[in-house]
Length: 216
Ligand code: SF4
Image (cartoon, rainbow, N blue to C red; front, side, top):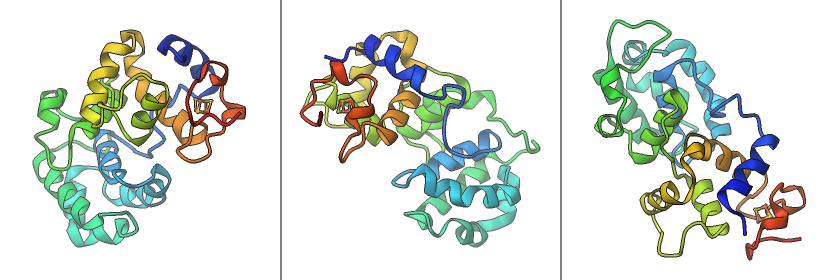
């Protein structure tokens, strides 16, 4: 059985813990935009378009100056780009202020409730933004966190939504790990404990794993 302590003690040393997200960004606004773009898309795909986009639109004001048609030209290879472009422009309208390229969210947005009032920011996006930018102990449940939680037996079949999984994980996993859960499980899920053909031979917790998907 992989307990949370066994998991984090053995997986963390195998990862680069200095970076908190593989998404490219230049400031807090561009990070939020990158997370919005990453819904139903891989970080790799998002990172292919964001360096060029953020060179011209690194703040809400610059994003508004680029405009929706200009934005779509940069992100058209990303899934649901029409919808995402609409949300990003609406987000920029609300956040537009005098800040420069080191743009930061005003403090009033440093809660999940306030972030979730913004266009394009749902629970998962808010959790990832708070977790990565401000070290908040939220657990963003994406496809990797969802899959691994079930594989490890940390949640049950009844926990069939990201919200239910997050609620269970917050109780199951000791608080000291909450701010790194998403980062560690995303990287472990992306490169080792993959959805198809997990690389169990290279997995640092293989000897404790009882998953039916284990292949060694
Ligand atoms: S042994 Fe395989 S299935 Fe188990 S956690 Fe590691 S990679 Fe995932």
